[in-house]
Length: 248
Image (cartoon, rainbow, N blue to C red; front, side):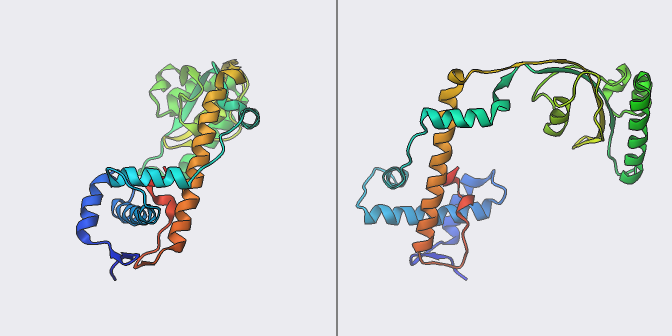
């Protein structure tokens, strides 16, 4: 079935030309089709509003500028967001840690690996002085050669799952259970913590305002495109607006 938008057919040639702009998308073909549809709707709106321009992109930008307006975030809104996301503004948190990595491979049953890792976790929690020896025996990380020691780590330096546990533990504490990441199963112990500090509000208020304004603008554009889709005669496809690069 042909895809048409307000009577205009989206041809194979149009899609082929648009594909070049979406090579990095998860589904380039789908992204190209959605983009062609939304551009058609916005250009139709430009015609309706008698908006001229040197290019289609300029006319589309003018439509969005005229039709989508959002109030800018004020200082109070920024301060509320700041207080609800204080962890994002911490700097200087450090943790000295060691771990034992049980790497998941096709050759080893995950169930068996998990059972072994849990057994080792129980042992190191009961006998912390055996950590170095057990790391050398079991860990699939190069750090096993130094007893699993990872040195001093900054927040954000490791993968998120590891990082979240690492900076929740106090000095001397072990992870209560195995920590799963894309690398495998980890036993983690923090040896030393050095607390950072939270950046003051006045130092980050402009960054927060920019973030909130951009977020509000994207949301408003998304709603406007949804409105245009709802008013249009689109045949041959259903289009979720959130997939359009126009709202990124």
